Length: 550
RNA sequence: GCGGUCGUAGCUCAAUUGGAUAGAGCCGUAGCCUUCGAAGCUAUUGGUUGGGGGUUCGAGUCCCUCCGACCGCGCCA
Image (tube, rainbow, N blue to C red; front, side, top):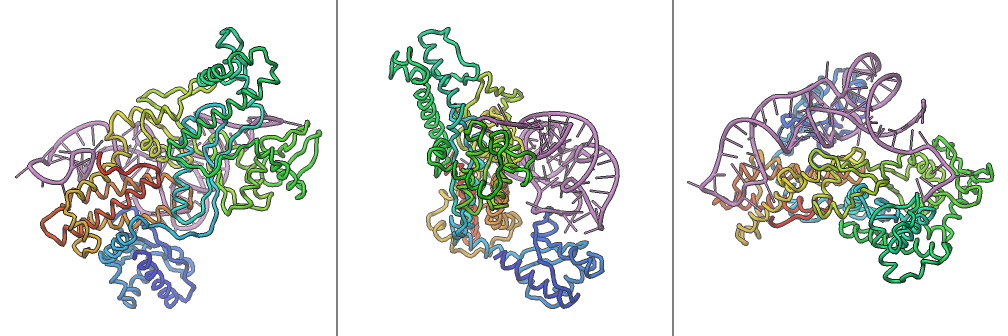
């Protein structure tokens, strides 16, 4: 296939370098040129050689090509064109190689691009929110990114473990309990004061009603020490359940919902502290226990145990990450935009625990919600929140999943809700889905006989420029997914889906699939089948449906 | 003040991690349906990659310096 062809070229080129220049050849790397007239692949081999060879790159490239065409004539079975252009060596792949590639795709079917199990364990954590309210837009983006990465990593043969951390320890749960209690009292007496640090959202009023329906006036006269734990736990459980329901609706499956309180209860937090103490990376000051974070690049040492002995949030994270680092080869955190100050601390922690470089942190940048020209106000303090559920009601799961991963993770996202629904043709997810539905429609019109024999048909008739371009695009799929998994770059899948759909539409416009010429018809049906399969798989990895009709 | 991320076409974003003349989509303009789905296709307008300097065969990408936006800087979580 393509990789074999490139490898053979690389070996031949290395051979030429060794005999002509007598120096060890550098690795021969290939990239697809931006401009199609430069061919399908290019290598910058001559640039890296120029210095040692003491000749200008253009001369080196020309010499290599001349030598190759003389001594390695068989390369022309694989490459229809090998040219040197100013230092670059450009390759055009022969049609028969594309045909072989397409045959391979058809043979692999839905497993095309999939890698066998590598035995490498990857932990992914994303979406995590405080259990004090419904999920909002930011978590939607975080979950889309995380779930897509998890899919891609699994597809590439990694053992993936996906988890969510429930921040259910600390003062905020008390604030939640007090907020619900205040709403509960307000049901009877509207003048009952609402706490300053309370959560203002209306959703707590519903929870208060539930308590009242269940328990009546039972808590009206009770002491705070009696009602607070009850209300806090009730609120926590209800809101976590609500978040889980939304995640499920969004098509995101977690392997574990890790409770922070549980980490304390099981002694895991204590173990983490003990580990750092054993390593000699802690010290006491002002009656508190500090972690020597500055030794690992952080700008401040960090408190683990407060003056009163209570562990900090970071202390919990020590335990949590220690747990993850111990059993995984790669640990990935996808954090919100307000957590970038946390990166050095966590990376320093990983290094301190003996796992430098094992922890990767991606910051999912913020989402600005737009309706036309109007930015939707999002103020948690004022209680103006737009929940993820509301967004899903408005634009649907498919559009949301696709939009959230469109920009690179570290780029901010402008999400125009009005645009996503009002005008379908401006919505890129529809463009891609339409491509899939269009193929399905053609396949429905074709005879069962034609479709059945298509995958075994001769592919020789596929010679048009749009046919070659589409075959080339499909062959990129394994490399695209591998790049997504390796570089944590889910947005490339969205772009790739768009490119596949676009190449198909061009092919469709130029080449009639259901033509009277039987060999041509079957070859084009084969290409359509492969495109449908790759498109469906790409959309599936993103978490978007591939409709048969729309 | 210190630190982080970012700044690319009117708008939303890419750019294979230092490669060729910086690319797509949307918007605009002009075309293409007696033929497999026109939610499509073709052509075309649009750029000093925030400004300036540096590193080298070669810079949107790396270094320095300004300008601007967002965010972080707690013994909160």
